[in-house]
Length: 304
Image (cartoon, rainbow, N blue to C red; front, top):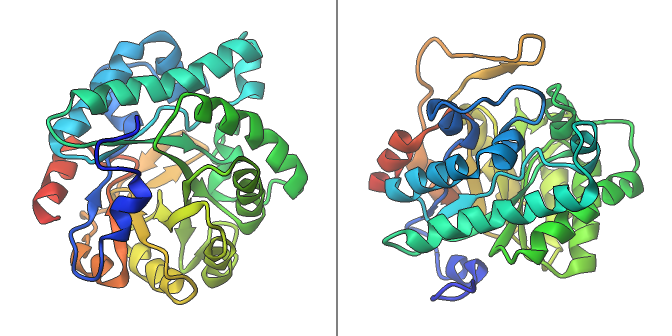
């Protein structure tokens, strides 16, 4: 890095109404599982990052070959406290965060088209491995959440990603904490909420949640991920009502996560993806999240 055509933010600036969107990758966990990786034990994709980095590179490569223009790193669930419970010291966890960026960057540089790297900064609930990211409101203050995220962000930035992906954020409190850390570092990021039924997962209004990012010069795009495809368009319209920033959308396949069993409940029929409507609403970064694999990303590449 940096990439040949300049920062990702500049690439998005030129994508006006009707312009083709930039394609994100799909779900990393489902691709690793399809490759035969063991994601058990609470560390999820972080376990593969630590034990089988070659498999992480292979997963990124599969998405790049499918046409993805942005690869999201395997750092979503990597945190100092949960990894310490599994015997990882702070230095080793920091090294894993940096490794996640290097692995994605290697796959990006090997691609036959330009590919950016987004360093995943998952929510606090992700490291609890109990589905808390779909509830939010952890009982922590903005200051406490900022203290949790700051060292993770610093470690990721040390490896030089093109952008940070502040993703699957369930409420305004955590978003405020993350935006505060961004302001300290000056780093560029996108901010993506997980939503349901026209509200954040914590039940807050979407317009207010997106408005938090509207005034942040570090935020290059706002939107939603890890949600039902049916929830995307209303959320994008809410975002467009309070900010002129580029929007992004990378939903799940329509399945619902069941924390009690640690499994996905699939929809009775595939949920439609009105991608053209998302683009008309302002989406300039479009891809998939959980249970969306390279085949679906290749289909989106043809659409975009």
